Image (cartoon, rainbow, N blue to C red; front, top):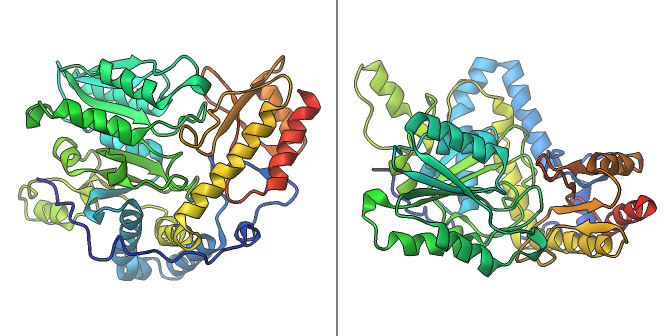
Length: 418
């Protein structure tokens, strides 16, 4: 059995907030070039001051005495990073694996599942390449069937009730895993994850334990923006990179796994974090039964200075306040959607309300390709991107690093060529 999900004392105590009442002070934490409007948090972050300083501190220690610094500090610093992630997610650290990206987390969780022929994985046409490909690998290894469904015809017109009902009607007796994405990176649509989790619980009520449906989530574009923790979402698998909306060290990520999920997942890469596994190998014995986040964490030598700076990223979110970060991100995104909607020839594909969207704003411009729009915006020092999907929409992603004037500047730039 996996390690129990008992919550360590003090995890849910009130967090310190209000250290950065001025959003200008938050912006000053990032060494972003002032001549550009950086609406790119959904891709890769600039390190804020506390994260940058922590990286340099650990890098200096490793450069001065690599072996000594690693042997003296490695275990406790890795534990501190796992604990910080677990605290943020509201769960026990034994259920958190450290990764280098969302992609690694999805791969570790989905390709490791003990499914077989006759089992089905249900996912959607709207999910990203990473989820689709990881599930294809799972199917090739186990013989499980992958079935994709369309959740809606148009993201802008999608409804919470419609999405929930669609999933409810598509679950079959052979369905063993539901694999979804919290915030779609092509359209910016946000799924009602907790409500979908309720559908999964309903379906599991009449199932034997060994036929329960597990719920997996690519959470990266909700992680660092939305306020729900792991248990409030009600999922079994949760993967996210920390180098996007969390503003954490580049090349870091997390995978969180429920008690139920641990019983079906298996490590795929030898770990360095669970000493009982290595000790068993050393004694030529079988490792203890069970699974946990330490065993699911890939071993090998890492860019340790980045991994060990994770507590500073979570600490910054605590200091600012998760609710304030969420509200600010939603306010700027709503302002941008409203401004773009008023431009003739522009179609915004992201739902307007915060109940169905997060920080990503996706749109297109009549008569222009998305690559052309992004190039025109960059000519005007606005950093946008093209969604790597067949839809290929333009994306702007305002975050707490941005200002209202930058949102208006981005919208005005679009007006110039729309």
